[in-house]
Image (cartoon, rainbow, N blue to C red; front, side, top):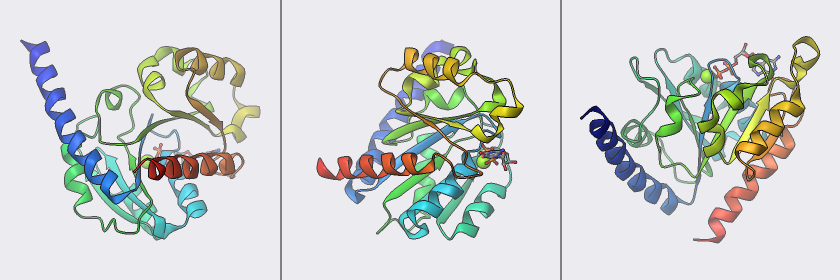
Length: 219
Ligand SMILES: Nc1nc2c(ncn2[C@@H]2O[C@H](COP(=O)(O)OP(=O)(O)O)[C@@H](O)[C@H]2O)c(=O)[nH]1
Ligand SMILES: [Mg+2]
């Protein structure tokens, strides 16, 4: 029975996510679901990405268990943002995001970024109507994370390895990390970057622009 309940919940979520995907598709924007551990640098990556793309082109849904701290950071960039507090839940679901986007003016926006609750496990199972899932990992977490948490690395269209500026200070084998990601998911793009210092950001921004153009070309 428990298994059936979980399946029904996921099915209901998928129906809602499909509706949201259609709506976002009509608006012609690219929706990106950022998934990663707490502290991997999702919000810093967003701040840096908004700086590169231009605040007027970006809207953000911030997911956290509690507080509006991340939404306050995004607000300072000038991008439109709404915070969702899950009150204990370890992931966002399509219902929360559908509700959140009604508070965002999306006309003229090119990108909707959804920062999921910091967690490498739960968010992988929940479709949020996004076009792309991106997993954000950092060198401070260790190079074996793809092997230990394979599902999210398998499902993501891209993997950002953040905090490369710290490699000289931590034991991290970037080759081992990327080899494992490629083994799990040969199609995934892998970006090695430092959201704090900006190195490697250009390739990430170019990839986003390419994906946006590709989505619009199929409309
Ligand atoms: N050294 C370094 N620190 C970073 C980098 N990106 C984020 N951080 C720091 O890591 C901590 C967590 O970052 P945050 O963006 O809040 O992570 P989130 O919980 O995934 O949203 C903060 O202290 C950031 O300043 C980076 O590229 N290099
Ligand atoms: Mg954050």
